[in-house]
Length: 423
Image (cartoon, rainbow, N blue to C red):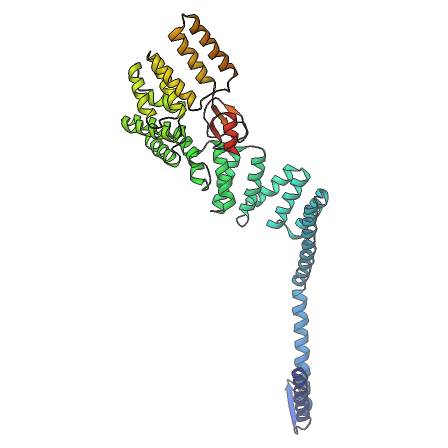
């Protein structure tokens, strides 16, 4: 309604103006040199209006002619953009459908229409990867990585490829570059933590580890690889405080304390670890400074007092008593270990050694020794280090299983016990 009203008002104004021009009286004269032109005012006014319109149309025509190339380019750009957007959509559909050839074809068409934008380069990289064209994919990703506005996209793709190739050094370099391009990315932090473990950069692995990571394991490994004594001591302390039951952490901390002359504190650490989880390496570290047999026996009693009644404590006392020649004590502690539930080969081998030392020259002693050795052959094997993730035995503790690559799963125990812990 408003539009109709405006048209009516404009029409009235035009009619009124025309009527006014038609009713003008008088004449006007225009002189140009020797020529003169005389006409009624109304005719002259109409002529001026027509001249204005003619000039206006001429100027519009000239402007249109000048702007024609630009307008043609804009039209061509709109057409390419529409065609490129369509090609992008088709490439995405082909990628989702797993159609490698179609994806590559449409990605190439999108690049031809839209140029090398982040979207088209990423499409080309994914299409090349799907088709198995690694060189083509890598080229597109490197172009992406060189763009300030899309470097993270390219670096992430290159990082993924490097990890698939297990090129851990290159992957670590790419991860550091990706962190500079897009600091604080959650996904990248997790990848960098895994790469730090893969490359043995334990301090970085500890710094990047999530809350549920085996921090004691990582800190122990970092302490073992530390460049300076102060850093090693600090990291070993962190590991021990995170998990006093981890024997390698306690041993690493005790070793660093002894290097600084704090032997008493080192022994306290080992006793605390023994109280949490007795383990033969702890006993070996605790008794290492003691050479004389009776003194070792006394040291073993102090260590066993941290966890009295435990089978490992009784076994340790039996072993050190045998070394000191205290055969009665050795037999008593060995029987206590058996009564506490120790039934692997170590206890029967120890009983055979006690029989040999005590009654080896008698027929009864030799018979008892044979019985103990037969029991040892039939008994379960001694506990050891093995991976709770894949079950592979290890000769020593390591922060990462070399067989399956899982961190923090090398544990002390029998195969059955380790399997229960993993479950």
